[in-house]
Image (cartoon, rainbow, N blue to C red; front, top):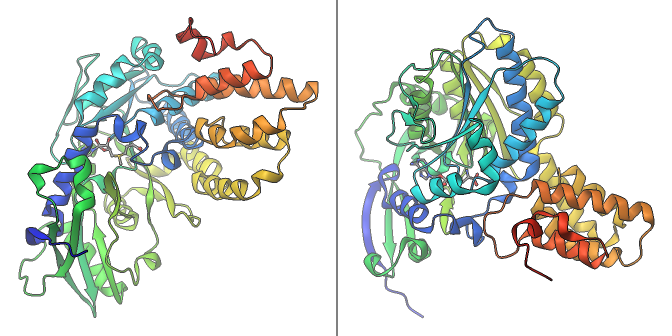
Length: 471
Ligand SMILES: C[S@@+](CC[C@H](N)C(=O)[O-])C[C@H]1O[C@@H](n2cnc3c(N)ncnc32)[C@H](O)[C@@H]1O
């Protein structure tokens, strides 16, 4: 069938393309359903294992701050950018609670700030029953923050404004699967010269007849090199970076996270002591990984995503006299970056130790590789082996749901030890589960399995919330 495409825009600089507006409007329109209906993937970057990793790094940082002679009363703020569903925050807060409970030293108080540009996501966070404890004790707050435009945060619960240099302590910033939601610039490097790239966007549907939730799939995008461009890059750092890339790389397409760098610069300015930026995304940190890249693929799933140029963010960290920590990534190319853009970064020895332990030795990307191995072997695993793999993932609910049919099969005949082990694991899965209104509720499945096994499921969260419900 022949499809007639209509040009929506022709030859527009990549970072100014309409696709970024469509992406943004998609999130605003879809709200929580972007994740509860499974359209935008989030498990790989927001599972319980990832939560534990962030919590370990934050704990290291809190220990470093405790050793400094800064005020012991001022809270350390942890800002999560583009929090979306809130599941990552729940994992981090509960794991951090647990890790701190094991420490004998007094650590500084902290407050985690969930942010987004989508007001309905912010309301969801404020009303969520699993967040109430943290909201009430001041460990959690909520704020609107637009990575392309905001220059301060007004915390909705405490009514505190965080603006230029209002903080003494360094700020912790979490950018989880976030930087590719901000416009990126695109360049083509060849023979020591960089050329900016433009984009033409066509569609076979009228934009005003379709909602952004459905629109992205009708688009055809074409990248052009803007050979005639005479515009020199005005941002001094980006200009310098492009010169370096021209000297180091032979031929490649390069995404340049200029807007992300402006956002990080703004966040740095909120504290007198700088920031620790923690970021997970698919992307490249080594210069060798940037060589020979084809035109970037715009991966569509309701919204779209791109690979993040972590190398450029690392170079920005160097410019700020910071210390950057990256680990070798596995086949999923999931990076966990820790950029310490603080005064005297070499003092942060507990943070370095935590990065070695939680990322370099075995990190979120290694966990993803292990899960692939597990799915390949799952039919051969015993009940005890299935339970062990769930424990390895810190009781993550998605892994549990994927293994559930096999657990049910294997639990037809069990030893008493197996039953105790399984029951203990089910309670922990129920505790680790953060409800985002998905069609299949982990709490419901946990309660159902308890029931099938002849246990009283009444102690599970599902029955606590739906007391009259009988399965
Ligand atoms: C790919 S989702 C990631 C959600 C979550 N962080 C995760 O890891 O699954 C991007 C999030 O960034 C938000 N977002 C998009 N544009 C933004 C902007 N300019 N400033 C702040 N947040 C933005 C979206 O609403 C969405 O919640």
